[in-house]
Amino acid sequence: MADSAPLSVTDRAERVKLMIFDVDGVLTDGGLRYGPEGELIKTFHVLDGHGIKLLQQNGVKTAIISARESPIVARRAADLGISVLLQGVHDKRSAFERTANEANLPHEACGFMGDDVIDLPVMTRVGFAASVPNGHPEVIRRAHYVARVGGGQGAVREVCDLILRAQGRYEAALAPYLT
Image (cartoon, rainbow, N blue to C red; front, side):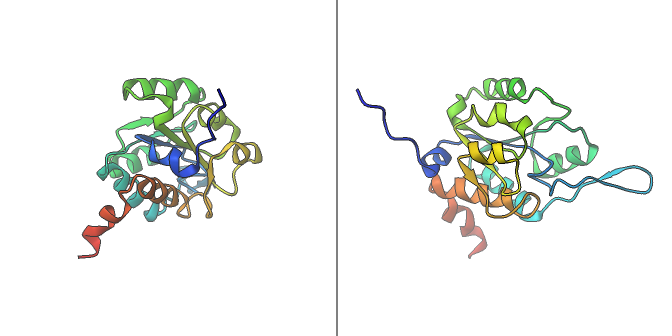
């Protein structure tokens, strides 16, 4: 029996029931800025936040898995209603597997967006792997989709819109804003 054709990006995005994001380099531009008191400052893009909200409103669960720990990320996750926030995680594979199991989802129904080699153990297991154009070359090579814009510049929103379009929910998601 012949192998079936590889899944298209649209087919992969259509299956996503849980979308997981890395933070540095994905939800932010990857820069680490320190304030005068040594506090870490991160900049998030509002388009990305609204894209995450649109996913949630259309039945896609969202989560964050990050190697770094930051109260700023906890605040952003709370603002966006992301209840699964795993920070200070260096074994992202185990964190992903626990998250997928707790959501009772197969790996094929999960998506992940990352930018560095620490993200590969998750990206190579999910049904839909996305990255940013300034991600590490090994990550880009293994991603099913690479956003046109960089991390912290609307890349997450681009992926959220792609998922909504693939699932046939994009127009309905926009409808409240067009009345």
